[in-house]
Amino acid sequence: MRKLILLPIFLVALLFSCQSNEGKKQVKQEEKVVLKPVVYDAAKAKGHQAYFKLSECLVKSNPTAAQTYAKRLLATMPEGIDVEVKTATENIIASADLAIQRKEFQAVTAYYQKVAEEGNAGMDVYVVHCPMAFNNTGADWLSATNEVDNPYFGDEMLHCGRVMKEIKK
Image (tube, rainbow, N blue to C red):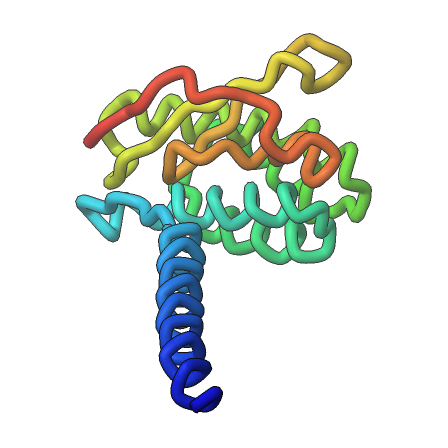
């Protein structure tokens, strides 16, 4: 008799425990939303995509990877590019010092922002600003999504900044 009473209680407890685990699985799946860039013209977007990889290396505070992706970025730059941008990219390649790489990244950003504003990015681009970069003088960077991951501070202040504008097509 005692087993008959405990059996329904056990089944109800099992039913509720399964439901709560299912709810937890749904929450975990929803948390893993990955934002994807919107690319309209893959050929035009090559430069910006290389720029975003370089930015990602700076976000992760990885100077060696930044050097590698700066080389790739340099390879995508058009002939006759502004000397300042080319020199800044070469300085990133030449230095393993994150502070120097991040400082030079400003000039690279200014060039790619101008390209995007002229409608030649081949993809949607977000302009993000961190007011605290470089002793509170502030600095911009570009992002392929509206997520804020700061290349000037990396994990020290990963989400410091805000999206200032979106540049479409």
